[in-house]
Structure formats: structure tokens, C-alpha cells
View 1 (cartoon, rainbow, N blue to C red):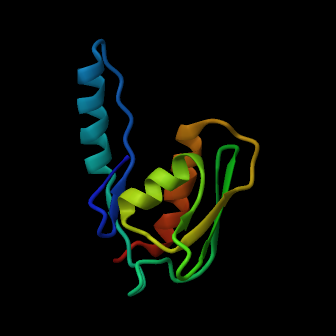
View 2: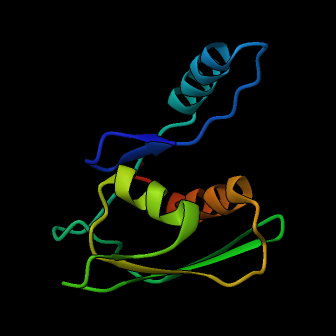
Length: 114
């Protein structure tokens, strides 16, 4: 997961013979898949949203003044996107962090600025 903490975030996956090569490929892939989000003035999401990716189900809602309340990979995605006031919940029993992160991105894709 990469982001600029100002509304842009992306997820990438890379495989390679060496760890450094895999990280470089994942970084390039994440840059290619980066999206710019339209957030509120308080750096939150405009409304609640649900998303499902594979077996991962994610629910997010704005929570003004409470900070990021999220677990697992959802917290990383939200923090790197620069979102500060949101309550997120993983509704599924999925432990797959990649599917959870992709589910979070699917939920955030509703707020992509066009």
C-alpha cells in the first residue's frame, strides 16, 4: 500500500526472486493503481459505504473527531490515504490481509474524484 496522506492511495502486488525486486514491482504496480479520493474538509469520507471483495466484507462510516477506528489492513489503507475521522469494520471472518486491503480500496473507490 502506498499513499501521499493527502487523498491518494494505491495497492500493488509484486513477485520476484529477490525481496528487493518484489518490493520494487509492488511499488510500481501500486503507483499504476493509485486513485485520488474526494474527501470532506475534515479529511473524512462523505457517507457510509459497504464493499465486498472475494470473502472480505468492509463497512466504513464517518466519525467526526474520533480518529481512525479500524483494524488490520484497513487501518494502513486509510492512514496512507490521509483519512483521519472514520470508523471501519471488517464484517467477514477473512484473515487474508490482501483481500481486506482490496476490499477497503473497493469501498474507497466510491469517493474517487473524476
